[in-house]
Image (cartoon, rainbow, N blue to C red; front, side, top):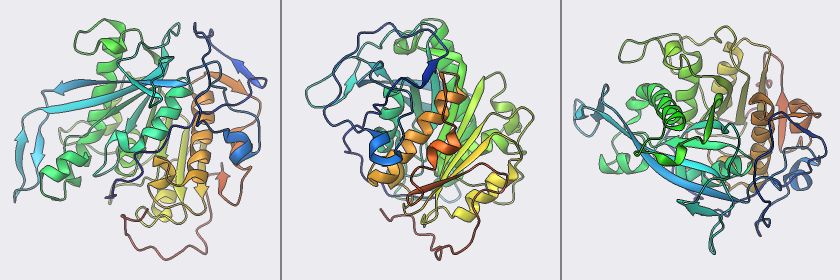
Length: 387
């Protein structure tokens, strides 16, 4: 669904929580703790009333940012400003933003471009993030920064036809038809990053030895969430005739996060054998992506380890760009808890279900097959530009 960019300039929020209940599963990072960021927020005391999520006091208080470009010469990009659509490029150029833990702080920001990553033996767990329609990865800077600050490397490609600049360049034409190509974009970028992490590449030197290819999560919001859902659960074929289920073959996917996403119309979705844990987040009040659509996807994914976080009052984008601060804090804390356990970073004594149910007026967690009951819902308008 189309959304209007907003709230990009939100100050970073560090997740600063006690370490006493966290049992690390891998060797500690070889770093020197640095001073906490001034505008950081205690998610436990402020939102969830509990003291358990991996502490970032022993991780980074700053985020390094780098951009690399990966080119897939086997697939094309369409120009939707013409009728019918024509080929705009015979290859897909995927500018990709990389966020990672660093100790380098700047005067005006907690984000540092070209900063040296903090060393982490074996590499960091990797999160591949897919952005929504008519925005960019930077729209979600607050969320992606908090994930990086919690000890993950976040890789976020700019999609050739759905990024904000491409929609603008095509004079506002509906470019969402390119969504069907984005599952392969995500898989392609994942493989490129893993390859460049294993062997030094002058094209993307920052990722050399940066990620652990055995610990990968996929996440997305809005159309990006739809792309992740298609890559993971769709039973059909992509435009090249390749089954979506085969696109991520060989990638060690251990977690799926779908933020305000849904199924493509008239498509079949199901969880494959040994499907990774799934966390879905959706607001009852979302007027762009209906909670009914999100619940339909959740119910079609038949597996034991899945959770549905129902936000009570938020709209479509503000829980993820930081504008709706209470909802944003819950999203950050819950997703960090989920990534920490699913990607085998640490064992947490509080279950995800119990952890996310500490503020029922803001959000409620479900872990059964059906998810939230679809009763007393507000009238759905399909208006995506609300903030």
